[in-house]
Length: 639
Image (tube, rainbow, N blue to C red; front, side, top):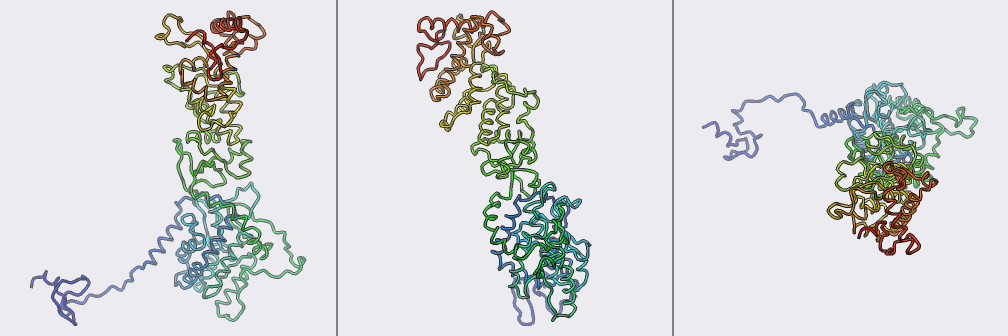
């Protein structure tokens, strides 16, 4: 028989059938002819071994960096955990019963059950954010939990379990659960709240205080439903040594003796009988827990009453609605999402709320600005307008971080005080190729309005300073005027007086510019002539600017004031009034380095027109002026 036929024959002692074998593991040879194969005595590695090794590697990896936190206050973190533990009662009891039934080496047990306890007690908040290891500490210490970067070389929360009490082979699983849950509660506060700055008054987030006792007591009460009774979770530091000694006696055979008083408080009928009184101080704020610090001043009544007195107000803060991600401004000027745990600690930044995004900005720099202290003290965050553009958000962020909001302002020397008589010159379209600033006139106006809505006085003043300091306008001014006068969606909103003053100065700005194209007025004017920005808007933008004029009452009023002022300045210049001329600014229509004391050509032309109207009508008003037609200065010269 050919060798390959043996693959299709299935023979055993019960039956002999010819046909294909469905499973290759079956014996396809005659049992009498097949040689006996000795099986290896080496034990296969179970899934438990792989899970333990993987969990141990993740919890002991020192290269993982999680320096951030969720930014919750301790009161809300306590209320959130209390509610979650109370809602998850069934799974907690089942997890404790299964852990108690494990036959696992004690040195491996914390690594195997850590993520499990994290899921049923803290909803997985600690996953990936905690480093766990054994370490020799004092004999009665339960361990130590440290904030990120406190332990050298570890950039996440670090838990160090005391290995001395667990070197005996008969140490119980309950003892490991006691110290592990104890330190996990401390780690929960660090992950959710972060380490408290040393300059602030201690709020007890790293001590065995009332908030810690609420969570520990709730877990202990739920564990009463377990098959083997409640967990021995020790709260009072001064009773831990006594509890450990009684646990050791009970394990050595004294099963009928009294069980250790897990966290119980001795009765104190009179305060004079307590040598410590209630004057114990808080532990130092060094980013580490001090579980051996005396906490006998915390009474059981305080822990029980917290649920009635503080829970409702704390849970209403709804800090979990902020989400687990924040947004940062990258070096290339983009807004990118990042996990809160991978961001810097929450104590180092504040959040600017822009729609659904929360953008981080330096807390120290933001609190240096006087106008931002009040909103930060009230809510701890800054609210940007919802319709604010991303470009404007980046400018606001840059101003808080650097004191300027673009590269141009940081490289140019701006005046320290506002010069309210300065305004930019409007250039023709063919001379706007190279902008003088990365931030345009429209951006300055939008930044001013965003700062006005935020109550950001320093940014308002800076944006107004930038508007008055602009040398020229290198953009289409129509969009900027629409934004300034709220023409469109925000037509009902009033315009800030500072912006209106700047707009009038912008209209009044007079320079020598080729106002009329040669193709239109060939032979009528010889070369460039002096003209105001208002007149250039009229002839360069025609009906577009006229339509803006008709849509905004504020723009109508400003145009009337500017025309009247230009006419008065022209008359004052022609009469050579020394008092008036001494008060004129360099960009006024009555003084120019080219013509000196002979008067500005525009002023002479405006004077002639004004005197003509005065002699005929008795005032400076254009005879064709009405509410719908703008009072252009050169109405009598150009049709």
